[in-house]
Amino acid sequence: MSIEWNAGNIGSVLGRPFLRKVLANFRGRHDARVRFGITGNGIQPNYQIEYQPEGGKPARTLAFRGSTHKPYGINEPFNEERISDAFAYWEIERAYSE
Image (cartoon, rainbow, N blue to C red):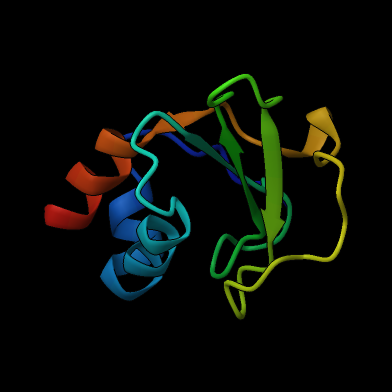
């Protein structure tokens, strides 16, 4: 099974507690973007946050387990075929507020 994430369903499917933890993992970087795994039932999807370059440093992507919101333990992005389009911080914040 796979789920297609969009701005209209992330809030209702994932819920406020899950999104609160996703927002916390942005680490105050409002220019970062998040992408959710599309396999499974969409209850606790793994996700990755793509942090933009800062002060000459390279861009960085951190993967998180949806069940714990802790780093996944890999230093490379998820497979492009198994991950959603990117959502901006404000989109997640709006879904959280609705």
